[in-house]
Length: 170
Image 1 (tube, helix red, strand yellow):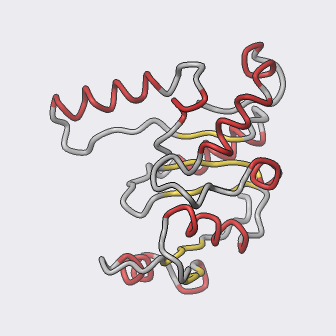
Image 2 (image 1 turned 90 degrees about the vertical axis):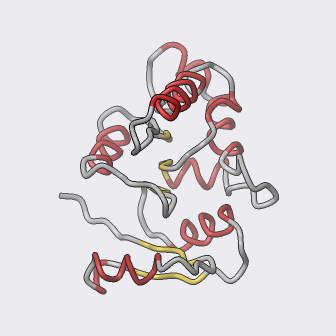
């Protein structure tokens, strides 16, 4: 198994996120960083600049991640040469309205439009891509991932469309 590090960036949370994370991971398996300036993009950048890995995975605190998700990210990067990606999203309640909403967004995200790649409850990218196209845009509240994902899509469009070489994951 590959070595990994888990960094929880506390960005002024008051919902018990830090305490909950501590209760699920031994202290030696979790590094808690406190980002003093509020904002999701700032918190993501704070963690990315402190991470040591070649692959960066950003997960929102309110996102439930299947156990196999991180193995799949590693496979996408190592075996398939993907440089970045976001995961399909879904509702936990199973209601028809929620199902329709997430089905719609997951289809829109497949369109060859740079801004359709938004909503990264779980986003990954290589450190190289983060350094080349990042950081997250701290000026915006929603869509802070666009400089990275859309930039990669625009710069590597020929590779993405042809199915050869490195390309962004969907």
